[in-house]
Length: 348
Image (cartoon, rainbow, N blue to C red; front, side, top):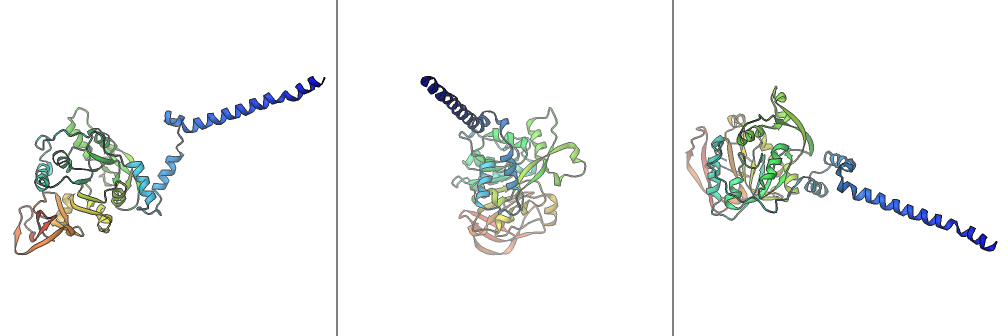
């Protein structure tokens, strides 16, 4: 009887042990499910983190230069350069669109300007597919430059990634104020067109707010993240750059630069090229940028080149002004030497 009683008392122990084992197994399973399965099966991931991130990016009271905010932009939107960039040569005479807006002349000018200088760094806002009308492609291919390419159109950005340019990439639009989501209008592609003409079609895409009446039926809109240029440069670690190209096709592209121009101690962009619209240049043929010298000799048709004044020194005050071919109403009256090698005539 005593033995039978002892057996009766010790009988629950296996059940308790089993319960502990089952509990541990459940803990291990849930831990595995929470941390491992989402990596293997991304569609099982909770959208809460992404939703919170979008709310964080759109919070109006947040400083656009807050270190945590800048780090979040960097981690989410800045793609590093490829491990093996495409180094194949590019012939400026090859594209069928080479003479569009005197693109080939601009490239020849940039090559002549920088060919004797060490490789520099660039930032291109409105990079499209990384080749079509790119103002930085020749600098990279022929002179070994590297930089940052920014393009919000998802279709163009996918092609841009395949180009394997020697640059960081950002699928963002640049906005003059706070971070926010904006509608981006992408023009419908026409089937059967050569790649160069498809690129021209994609280059006509723009922010939905800039489309004309009727355009909305020829394309579709998607939400894209927009950040100020200052935030973008901080996130990509490009506070210093040799060349910044802005070509988004908007009438007020120069306003995108205001936040950077106001902080000359934080951002040192040595040269800036802006592609203006005809409407802007009709009113002001020689728009000015605060803190920069206007380079009349190297400005073509609708592009305007500027040099930062802190990198330039006035050589002489010209008494007889020099007239230029594109606009008879303006004349160059000052002569600078910038970065120690470039002679610049300016109308500032």
